[in-house]
Length: 259
Figure (cartoon, rainbow, N blue to C red):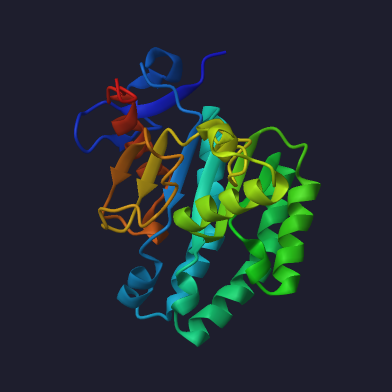
């Protein structure tokens, strides 16, 4: 069975076209895609534009954006989708915003994640979850366990995640579990086996909404050969149509993997 991308092939500024347009078969493209990662940026700016508090931008994404993107990836046969939801630097934000975000995480784990589970979504958590309040960390682990046998897609949420922090934690864990380890036994493969992403492929495509042209420390190890897609569209406006634009751009690229 052929998995298809319904995209209007119009060069720059390609648009999603479910009602009309060219059907681009995924297996006809020279680029296959297993893993998409999204740096979620622009929530606060969107809220400010709407005359709302910062937390409303985050909540709009949780309530209206994430699940349709997951649904679209399931539809296309993309097996891994990662959202960077909270960085190691985000703890420096305003106390009121942080309190609101903790409540939003509780809301997501109590209500939204169950909807994903019912759709066959396997939940994964990247990052050092133990820094969160105990009830949030426990809920996260609970849903990871409950959904572990789901196979439609793996949706990973990077929480208290930073790329340097991930690599540092991986090396610490490697040394702690292998106290007799010597230098010539340290390989890329060994380090990779201790990363948060050890059981998933590297991202083929990293998307950053919000207009910033940087990765801000996201997946420095895993993203060495990832294609990058930046857009001025803010995350609360990053709809399925915007995802299709990114995928159209991706399928037109020539990937070299350093060769």
